[in-house]
Amino acid sequence: MATPRSSWPNEMARSSAASWCATMQTTTPSIDRTSAALVCLNQPTMPMLRRHCSIARLNGPPTILTAHNPPYYQQLIESCGFAKAKDWYAWWFADPAKAAARLRPLAERFRKRWPVTIRPGNLRNIREESRRLRQIYNQAWEKNWGFVPFTEAEFEFMTHELKQLVIPDFTLIAEVGGEPAGFILCVPDINIALRHINGRLTTFGLPIGLIKLLYYKSRTRTARLIALGVIEKHRRTGIAEMLVLRIVEDAMIKRGFTGELGLTLEDNFMINRFLEAIGAERYKTYRIFKRTLT
Image (cartoon, rainbow, N blue to C red; front, side, top):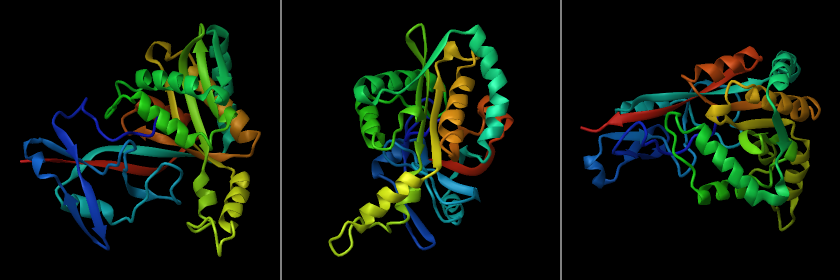
């Protein structure tokens, strides 16, 4: 489960991405003339974080690091010759207590069999923690559709961007024998607070927007689970179950949070069945489109 990124050479050699200019209900793909030798064009995209097109289930406003668009975008994109490449799902946890009740027996059973240590992220040593998370991420997702390894600079940038939102209990690292084995990253949904300031931190020179932002940020009780990953050799040892249980118990139940999980690939049947089994509801679908160039 992850926030996907912008290109996927593992699946499509000689591919590129289209940017779009959309005004009202017209759209024009802007394609570099040098792409004539390409065999595939992928859309929609943005640097580092892939901008999906929301389709079908547009329930609620966008959460942090997710896209949102008018419903007619799907028709416009398809009218330009694009077809579905892959769908991604977002899930909603409406009842964390129910999830904890289902996870607890599984996690306890695995905990007795495997020596796993789970600790919160150390924000005082953010550079070293960033290195560990990047190591886990690149190994855990390397076989996923569309995966591109994070460079050190990219991951440091992402860490810097999210640092102000990260809460130690919401970022957990699993270790086996002192070595990183998995991690889970959850952040409060700052979008809820941002909606109250209407894009302005000041009014008539007064920091009214900033005060509102800080006020609503402290009262936000919605989070988004951005990433959950376990290195392949440590899978099926209960690490994922233990990580999710800790987040549900410590972040959601104790602090009164509900929230979104995602995104997951439509054909990642194992993680999708797992989320359904613990009571998560699939409530949004995002799509990546592709077009073969002839």
